[in-house]
Amino acid sequence: MPDMVVRLEIRGRVQGVGYRWTMAEQARQLDLRGWVRNRLDGSVEAVVAGGPAAVRQLIDWAHRGPDAAIVTSVEVFASAGEFTGFDQRPTA
Image 1 (cartoon, rainbow, N blue to C red):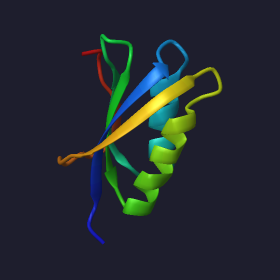
Image 2: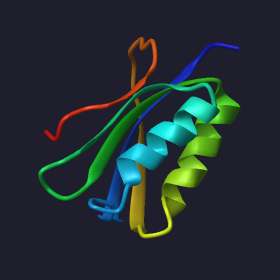
Image 3: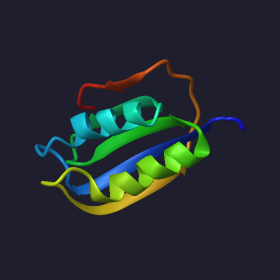
Image 4: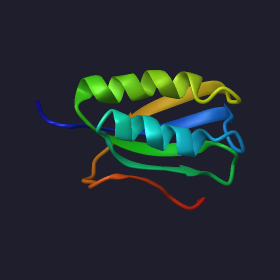
């Protein structure tokens, strides 16, 4: 089955709570590729690529986030790209 690639926009209390680090760890455990970064508007953005079931698992996790996070919304958009690992990128 071909890879699924999505872009996530996560809002709420998602900066300063270990969200990016924890998402990267979750993604690596699920053998996903892509990246995650903070946005200047206080949100977190991620692009996730991999098997559809694993991508859906990470989307489910994104709605909860790490213990200190309070996620108010997760928007999911179709995306594209090829990635070799899962990275934390600088704030944009």
